[in-house]
Length: 101
Image 1 (cartoon, rainbow, N blue to C red):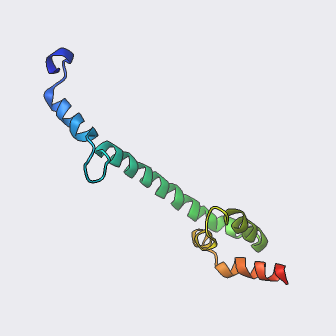
Image 2: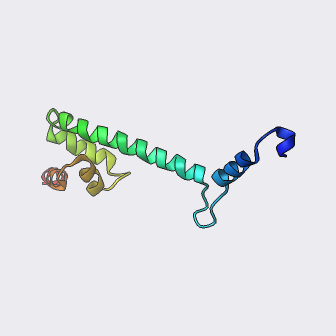
Image 3: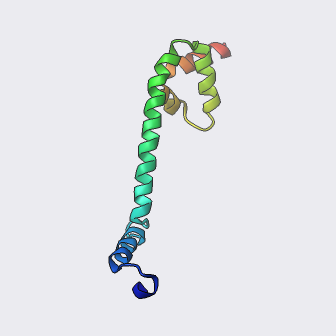
């Protein structure tokens, strides 16, 4: 194969090492590197959004935050949404309590 395609044997060994599936994880080194890159990108995006959230927080009313939590509640827990948005859960629950009375 090396002579047919003119590829160095070291290149074949590197490809094999990079794309061979690990018995323990079931993923190749290439897949793990791709996942690490994706995680780093998502963490960066998350950091940007959290920093920009402080500017938005000053301009948005409590009712708008409560509505946002309610909209996201089917897909995410109220606790998770509040932690991500750095809001007290009581903000959401207090609104729910006053609506029911």
